[in-house]
Image 1 (cartoon, helix red, strand yellow):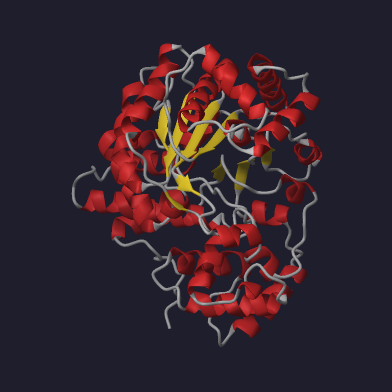
Image 2: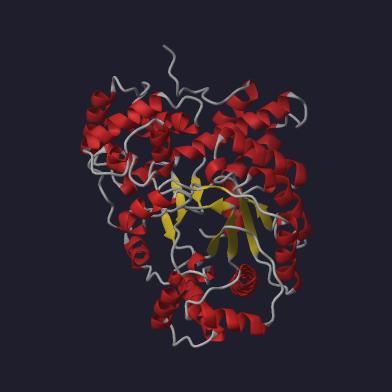
Length: 468
């Protein structure tokens, strides 16, 4: 039987096979956005079993298991690790045509030398084989990162984090991967939620007493400077929607006072505060020459019963739509550009119907000759890091901008073996470009194609972020 994960996996034309093997396959990884735990990296955590490594925190797999009819006891509950693994194997056997089927078998092949299809029938044996492998090879967070040829990792960190694990990682001279923090101030936008007042209290303890919105921005500036001292050069923002709403200083003062007092804020007020805060933060990022990332378009925790029982980030989120996105996005970027503090920016839309809106918008704000594609259309994110999602994003980017300058794939994952998705992306990229070559839509020029593939796989990110 031919191996499922083989040299031609996902490479659907002869040129794709050539491009992947000559240019893409062995490129290092520049993981500029992920959710890996810096504590686990610092402590070089050893994994006792494959269930802990493979299923812990992976809401992609959890959603599939629920669709298979698996009880929550075997998903996020207290079932023994072996039983959880067997339930996942049963689910995976039924997940053909889902990217999880590809990712999981890539991970088995790349990290554990398992080349057979995982099924309910062989789950017990493979569980024992992989656990023996984990022990015999002393598989740890750092060994997995090194095995994946990762040169750089940017974690995702709250503005109030002390970042001491990043200091510890930096001091470990035998670990060669650079690990840097990235500023993620999502909580600072949540003026209509109780967590905002708690955040302000914690922030004031780290910086200065915060009595008003001016103090708040001053404190945020101090935290940006703290992250900068620790090597951070990226910020990221997870926004449900992109909102632009005119405001006055009196508006913002009143909204802030209400938020501290935990009084309700109108929808318009929330949009005004988002506009205000993005303007202020973009100024701070520009001063520090940071890259600003914005992920938008998720509607989270939709199953309220499950949320009350399991909490956030457990697999009950969906793609959101938005009225007047194009107008809001253009006005937001224009506000920053007009104030001369639009930083290098990456936009990630969760709803793929907005690909061309994002692509045509970013083309309006590329007027900086010193930076190639200063405003980027980010890689397919979350529900779009699939073959279909990646192809849609790259096709739109090629239509609307310059795919030659695309900064490429990111992990955006909590899993230490999700680096296989970079290989997945590279195979899809090579098939996409190879098909265009074979259709004579791109010249069959070795120099041109090498530049294109290596740029997207690694070089563009290296040059754009300037972190190592």
